[in-house]
Length: 225
Image (cartoon, rainbow, N blue to C red; front, side, top):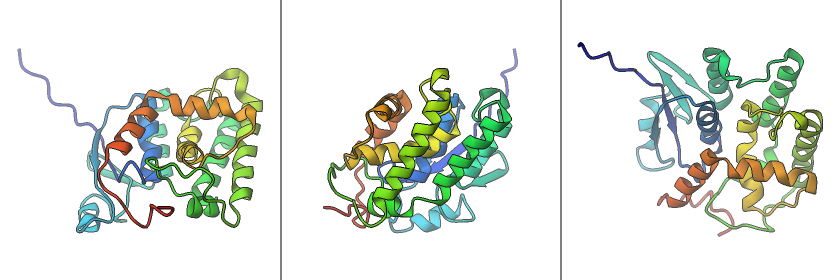
């Protein structure tokens, strides 16, 4: 019997799991959707890392998805591509209006929350409880909380995630979940179950364990010592 041809799996190029919030988003989406893929990790800010990344991505940044002869970069673009290539996996909510809301909160995460990003950068290995409350951070936390509260109030009866079932919106906010854990952010009691649900996902646990095992340190990202 002739052997079957090998299956070419898509490849996701990511950065350090401890620091690269943008890498976590499509990685988690693919894991949760059950999409089989190869992973290439390129430590950021090492000598030669930019040149190595340019071998995979025209932007020279992570993440980047390579699917055959096609390349997609930027976290949200990768997630959109995956949703279109695998429509049966439900990476976006099925209902058009719900899907539009999920896209809206995902796009807001993609382009906003600059104070939160700056003062509370993703750093899974650290315990920075009580730190990071720079200018504008409280407003960003309040806005994230309001988004989560609204989504859970609307769709909580359908499941444990923002829109009931896990979706790209949850992947987009996953790095914020790790930030809230790192910086000990106090959330309303109604949001603790969502935070815990996200942190307890096997895929999130795997990412967190890998982040803690990494040897690289980026001094500019270890901003509080």
